Length: 130
Image (cartoon, rainbow, N blue to C red; front, side, top):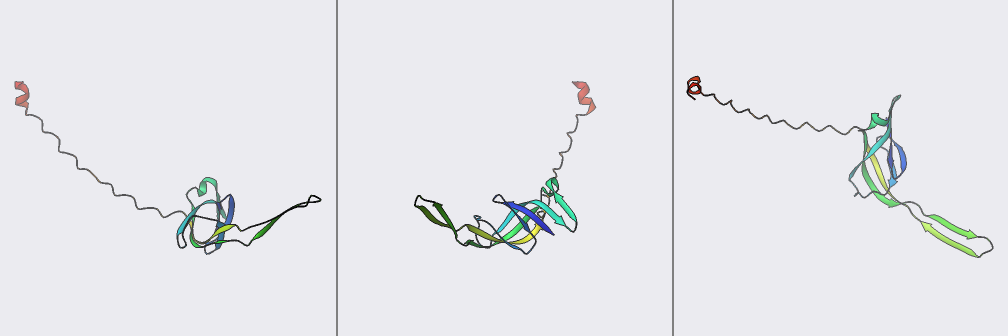
């Protein structure tokens, strides 16, 4: 079974047990995070749209870090313009622990109020006297 979820305007295809690097999340190492699912597939059955409305991907934050440095070099010929700049994109590594609908919470116990005993009507003799 695999699912596709969206985070940070990017989509990721994951299965249970995968470790994926996503955009930096504000979560501590060891915390559990959930992502909404865009598509879910299981042995030939594909679910999309309203069929996956309540389905989520759960994962545990493994680490926070930065990717390998990339070099941004701007250059204009014959103008002696050169600008060298580096960038390291921060990420969060998440290990996928579960794919599926969140566990249904047990329904709250309904408290039943006992109805008050109906008021006894006045005897027929009293009604006639009035």
